[in-house]
Length: 172
Image (cartoon, rainbow, N blue to C red; front, top):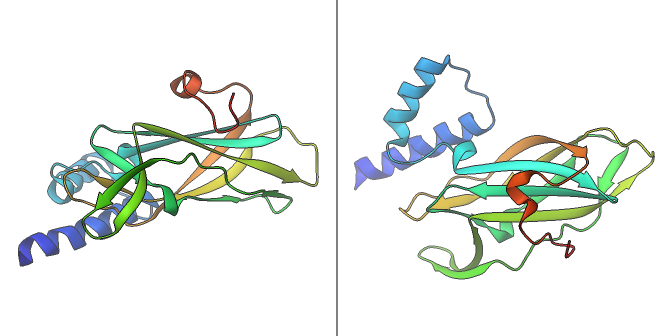
């Protein structure tokens, strides 16, 4: 039990460092370290792949989750890295109610989820919008990642192909 707990703690620390790109290793060393610590679990940025785009005064963030991984509904946050841009209330679909062994009843997203928020800007700039998204997810096999952040660029235009067939939060 102690060995498993130590492995989980080390995994959490490594995953957080890897997610924030604070740990810089060449690709061979990184693969070896990931294999040692992660074993059967994916690095956070592979388990939860995010994309962003903007359209009609809204910013959208889509996550595509690896099979067997899910995101917590209550852990999403969105920030602009541009001081002249902010966002209205984050729109998040309802999700699926599950009973988590440690957290009780929570809403989660398997497969895909698309979030959106109105853009509040002091300019009419339609260039890429620099955003930071906070999220947290788990594996069905028992690993819960610490909260993570990813930095994205939301470009104006059409929905990425990955999310084109799904229903977006504003009904489009």
